[in-house]
Image 1 (cartoon, rainbow, N blue to C red):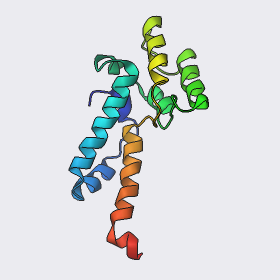
Image 2: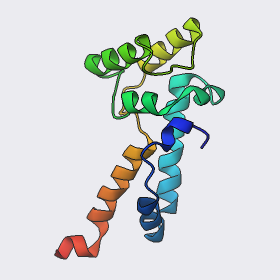
Image 3: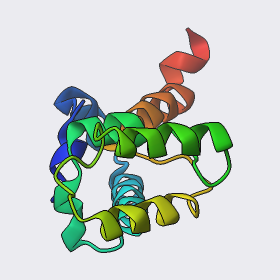
Image 4: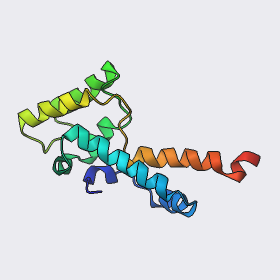
Length: 131
């Protein structure tokens, strides 16, 4: 996945445990979902190069299409140039704002996907049941 900003928070130890537990299909599905949501926000796969760590931090776990507060947060991050700093074309920035209004689910990231798998592992672990 060629989205540089999504590498933030990557914890290889989590992935080695998840893959050891044979969750390959779920991992692929989760990573595909992350990619598709970010592609929808930016408007194309090629535009994902503009996603940096600060953008991910400002957008992840927000649902700007469902929450006015979340939309205000992400739109202010773009306006203040905290998010999408390298995307300088005003028309494309406006398109991203419009796209964000259509995202009514939480915006995922590799970090949030890792957290999800930590939870799933705890719920499916025999040790967790009897501990």
